[in-house]
Image (cartoon, each protein chain N blue to C red):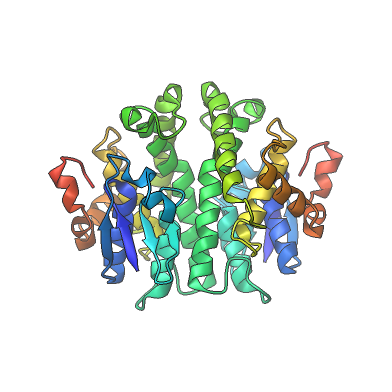
Length: 216
Length: 216
């Protein structure tokens, strides 16, 4: 297995998840800033051009962080970070998609269509006139989550799952790019601080990122 | 297990998936149009208010269609519609999230912020100024998918999976709500016709939907 790795929140989520699972991943660095991922030879192997991408031992490419995390979870031993029963897995997958659609995707698009516009304008359809409302949508999602998190340590109660690693990786990246975690969200802020304290949070930051002055 | 069921593309996806898996689901109808799902007692049981929601035998509520489909897949026998190996499951989950983020979510939001504005304006942050570009984003995602589908019967090659049922359910609903599948997308159109021919497609249409003149 080989992780095609880069700057940005998505690869960091996979690195953090792998560390939590005790998996040592071989990594190949791909230069996102120069769009190396949008050209041959990378594009020939991984037609979607997305990063991160996990190259499996049989040569297939898996992209999409949540699919990669579930794959790593299934391929390794130790406690599952998805769940040990169908009910637990359903709960973790439900929360992963809830935060994905209601918080992370509007937050990322809010960034891509504003602060990130220069980088993204030739890579996807950008909607600058929606940036502020997308950021407001993400904050509204966090408001609701704050109510949910009252009395909970993690999204799924006492159980740290893929959903926490995913949301933390996104929030931590965009906090340094104009969308901080608002301190008045007491429950989300406490959870965020708790996640940031895990050794995997620091250990998954990108070495190259520091060199170019960007949070990896 | 009990499916809290309603109009709309999401419950239909779960109904179609269940039929494909040979699962007979007990259903409770919830009136989406009058926002029954946004009030007690439903909201007390399912705080997110989302439909569909699967009530498990131990009383937990699972929302998010992809989490519900994976749960049904795990709880029933017969060939899996996710995959029988970690590699197959990764592929199906990857395609599910790809079409979710790149096609279905922009398509649904394009609808909510335009044709659906009256229904959704008090339920979520609507971004009418983004509606046209969101629809264009969905079509651009379908353009790319059309290239991918050349020579493929399903998203994951010869294997019909959750990703196909999910995408079909979304496209079929929005086709009747201003976002048709463009015939020039030859491969996507062929796949769509093929999916529409499956007995599960017709059988999963909502009985109540016909009564209110809306595709369920």
